[in-house]
Amino acid sequence: LYVSLEGVHQEKVDAVFKEMSVDVKFHDVQGKNYRCAIPKLNKEIVPEKSKVTVKPNKVIITLHKASKGNWMDLHFKEDK
View 1 (cartoon, rainbow, N blue to C red):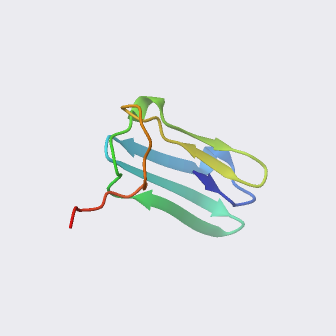
View 2 (view 1 turned 120 degrees about the vertical axis):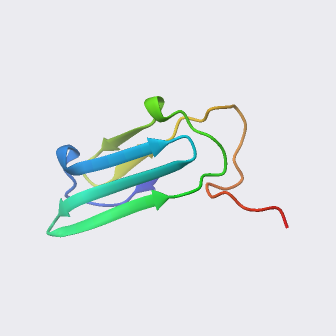
Protein backbone atom coordinates (compact mmCIF):
# COMPACT_ATOMS: atom_id res chain seq x y z
CA LEU A 1 0.00 0.00 0.00
CA TYR A 2 1.33 3.43 -0.89
CA VAL A 3 0.26 6.33 1.33
CA SER A 4 1.11 9.79 -0.02
CA LEU A 5 2.10 11.66 3.12
CA GLU A 6 5.04 14.02 3.65
CA GLY A 7 6.81 14.73 6.93
CA VAL A 8 6.43 11.27 8.48
CA HIS A 9 9.15 10.13 10.89
CA GLN A 10 9.76 6.37 11.30
CA GLU A 11 9.89 6.66 15.11
CA LYS A 12 6.40 8.23 15.14
CA VAL A 13 4.73 5.36 13.29
CA ASP A 14 2.79 2.68 15.20
CA ALA A 15 1.95 -0.40 13.14
CA VAL A 16 -0.12 -3.35 14.31
CA PHE A 17 -0.24 -6.28 11.89
CA LYS A 18 -2.52 -9.24 12.65
CA GLU A 19 -3.39 -12.24 10.47
CA MET A 20 -6.57 -10.62 9.17
CA SER A 21 -6.07 -6.89 9.86
CA VAL A 22 -3.69 -3.96 9.69
CA ASP A 23 -3.71 -0.72 11.68
CA VAL A 24 -1.04 1.93 11.08
CA LYS A 25 -0.99 5.25 12.94
CA PHE A 26 1.15 8.23 11.97
CA HIS A 27 1.72 10.61 14.90
CA ASP A 28 2.57 14.31 14.70
CA VAL A 29 2.80 14.67 10.91
CA GLN A 30 3.07 18.43 10.53
CA GLY A 31 0.96 18.78 13.68
CA LYS A 32 -1.68 16.19 12.71
CA ASN A 33 -2.29 12.49 13.34
CA TYR A 34 -3.31 10.06 10.59
CA ARG A 35 -4.44 6.47 10.52
CA CYS A 36 -4.65 3.75 7.85
CA ALA A 37 -6.65 0.77 9.08
CA ILE A 38 -8.20 -2.25 7.41
CA PRO A 39 -10.09 -4.16 10.14
CA LYS A 40 -10.86 -7.21 7.99
CA LEU A 41 -8.49 -8.13 5.18
CA ASN A 42 -9.52 -10.22 2.18
CA LYS A 43 -7.09 -13.02 3.10
CA GLU A 44 -4.47 -13.81 5.74
CA ILE A 45 -1.11 -12.07 5.99
CA VAL A 46 2.08 -12.98 7.87
CA PRO A 47 2.35 -10.26 10.58
CA GLU A 48 6.07 -10.90 11.30
CA LYS A 49 6.99 -10.35 7.64
CA SER A 50 4.80 -7.27 7.09
CA LYS A 51 6.38 -3.84 7.53
CA VAL A 52 6.17 -0.06 7.16
CA THR A 53 8.84 1.86 5.20
CA VAL A 54 8.99 5.65 5.44
CA LYS A 55 10.17 7.59 2.35
CA PRO A 56 10.48 11.40 2.01
CA ASN A 57 7.05 11.91 0.39
CA LYS A 58 5.24 8.62 1.01
CA VAL A 59 4.88 5.65 3.31
CA ILE A 60 4.93 2.08 1.99
CA ILE A 61 2.95 -0.51 3.94
CA THR A 62 4.03 -4.00 2.86
CA LEU A 63 1.61 -6.83 3.64
CA HIS A 64 3.18 -10.28 3.28
CA LYS A 65 0.55 -12.74 2.00
CA ALA A 66 0.18 -16.01 3.89
CA SER A 67 -0.63 -17.83 0.64
CA LYS A 68 0.19 -17.16 -3.01
CA GLY A 69 -2.36 -15.80 -5.44
CA ASN A 70 -3.97 -12.55 -6.46
CA TRP A 71 -6.25 -10.53 -4.24
CA MET A 72 -9.15 -8.92 -6.06
CA ASP A 73 -9.69 -6.62 -3.09
CA LEU A 74 -7.89 -5.63 0.13
CA HIS A 75 -11.11 -5.71 2.14
CA PHE A 76 -13.00 -8.88 2.97
CA LYS A 77 -16.36 -9.03 1.24
CA GLU A 78 -19.22 -11.34 2.12
CA ASP A 79 -20.51 -13.53 -0.70
CA LYS A 80 -23.97 -12.36 -1.69
